[in-house]
Length: 267
Image (tube, rainbow, N blue to C red; front, side):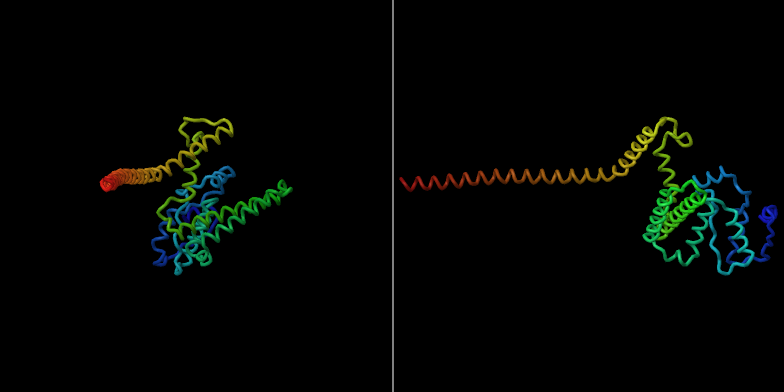
């Protein structure tokens, strides 16, 4: 790592003895930290557009007793990241050691996200969107939205114990892949979409299949409950029918007895 930093003209002196709390962290960072050259615009777009959970090295927690050398190592690690990897590391650090983030709830974070989306709408609606300053404002508002979205995902995981579930961005990627099977990058080649209408039709068809699979378990349970209810109703109907027959027969017997008694008295 030090050789790569020196190659970029950065002078970093290693800590002679990392603190015990950082003993396990420093070796990980020495393997994980890579300081690449500034990426091209095309690679930056790819990083921005399609984040991959496997690409960002995990953020190690900072010990309060970290030495100066350990802190420099953590900073070098963060400085080596770019695009969504860097933003995700910012959010991870805030979630672990920032006291303000610890007190923010999901509902509050969601409201801020809605506010940032509203501000972006306002910027898009302006008439000067072609000017340099306006374009910078749009990029800034988009960055605020991405930051709030990543923060909201992290806070929801923290507050609702979602650590056993995959990351939200991975779930979103898989969902879009299922609903766009015509894309060459992940489709099976079985379908194509040459127009927006065809793409929308495939999207809706995939969404209906997902909804059907999701409700399939519930519908089976409802069918079982319905069958049980039907059997109960049938038993009630049979019981009532038999009770009516018995009652009718009993009434006939009583009526015959009464009429026979009345006739015998007249004689």
